[in-house]
Image 1 (cartoon, rainbow, N blue to C red):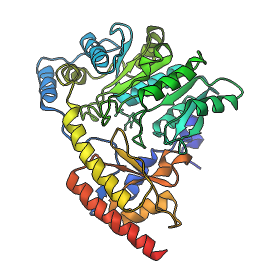
Image 2 (cartoon, rainbow, N blue to C red):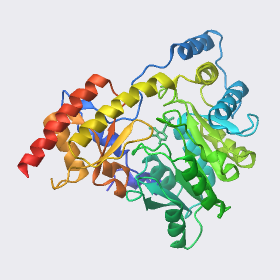
Image 3 (spheres, rainbow, N blue to C red):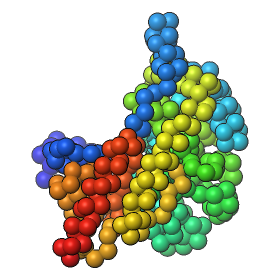
Image 4 (spheres, helix red, strand yellow):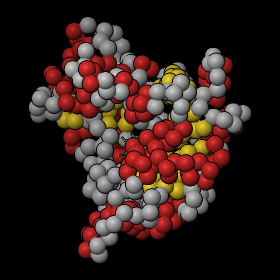
Length: 395
Ligand code: PLP
């Protein structure tokens, strides 16, 4: 039993687990010299011009609370960015909110939407934060296994899952490009999902598009283009501008929903950091293409990892975005994803994340984050190759 239960702390929190990604990363951290392909953060520095803008903001004493939804200049920049890049149309006055990372954007959204007992459709494997936030809201995640549909949820799966429930779900959480699989949708696929969801006008889509600037060989399609009135788009600068530590997220939502989201946001944090917002204005206006060189580097790394996995005859679909590869475990080695990854770290000093950290549908897989230097990835792939050969020799 948790030692604090005698204080009668909130049950949903007592039941929560620390992120399995972090847990695993900590567990294997003693196996030095370890190459970590575990965490989901860019290894690039924040662009110089963005850093300069932040320094200027400090010197100019831009050190006060901003308006709750964010400095209007930032909201205008965010609205323009979404319009130029993804043909989205959100009024900066009433439909854009700056948050403390996409994490707070998701928390604000789910805490505003969910009543206890509400169902939330969650395609699985999924980013574990979703489950924590849904459970903190005393709502119920309803998983849709996408491992048989190329890790993309289909309209049929959505319909089928809804038909098994005793009430219409309150929300669906969609995440394309996806963590952990790197999959994303085409315009036609997004449109088909939007069309299905439009049959359930009380069901809201929470579309986590934080990897929108990291789509290879095509451009990102936002669900907001096809299902504007039912969609809350989540985005931010963590991945596009290598700004994970700055904590700047964005919500785009129809004004009737945004006006409620703002209340939750105000109660949680008052407003996002003023200095970070100022840097964000620079990033979204003069740094609209800052992700391009990073994307080119990620693509090279992705191709190297894919080649290694294919040479090892592992079943893997080439990711279309983000910086993750979700590979099947080698067949016939008789291990689950945790044992496989623990063994890799212990015997060959490479850390990757067991697929089970992303829900039951992730068992049988492991996630490689290739947001690391090409030379580290090369060494890691040599070690992974030796590990898989050793395992096969044993079996
Ligand atoms: N959504 C997804 C799918 C993520 O992978 C992450 C971070 O890894 C986040 C949201 C959180 O982003 P932020 O750092 O902006 O809070």
